[in-house]
Image 1 (tube, rainbow, N blue to C red):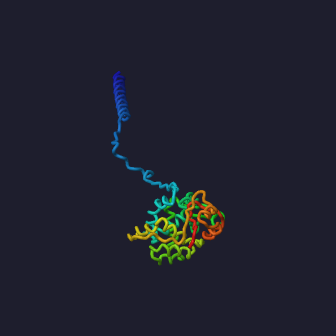
Image 2: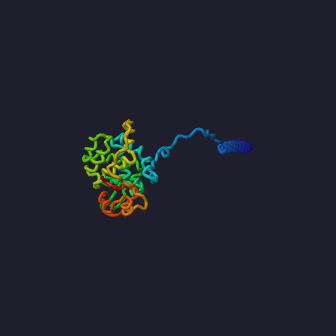
Image 3: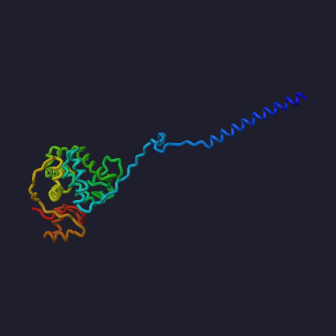
Length: 273
């Protein structure tokens, strides 16, 4: 009998301890579930390794097509002056070439490829565009931003031995620069120097050279060697020949043209001395 009573007491004791542990366990779990962690919103957690990886996406800058040659000059004169400071190429020459080669920013290469100087794909691994020039569908360089076209123009002239004579000329002598560009083979057009000089003098592009060099001298209006005409919509060789009292053949001869096609924004020589 004593044994039975002893067993009964022990079983009650064990059962009581087990109930206590379970209750304690439930309370702990309940506490864990309701516990909150308050984070100060002003404190940013340390970035993970994945978050610290920076991905740079180079996007093309939207092309702005100038409405006029004056607007083209306003857009790109600062870039031309910076190139002059870095590479010692007259800003007037760079701007005149840009106006002439890109039709004041309206030509296809300028609009679709940001290529303002007609530089072809020689030794080029970047983006490309194909365009009819001396031959059908020639390869030309394509840029994300027109400013890179200006930089490539500087590198093109400074990096080729045939243009080294340019850098022996006075940097404010735009007339000699224009003539030496033609002599060095930059353009096949015999009237190329005269066209550059005419643009520089018509739009007083030499003032951008003077601003870089710090020259404040007063100039008289330059005497033009030839009269020129900026081609506008609706112009034809026939209408211009009547306007300037000359002939279509003479206009073609003065401008080294092989067809009657005209490009809006280009400069046409209409009278020679």
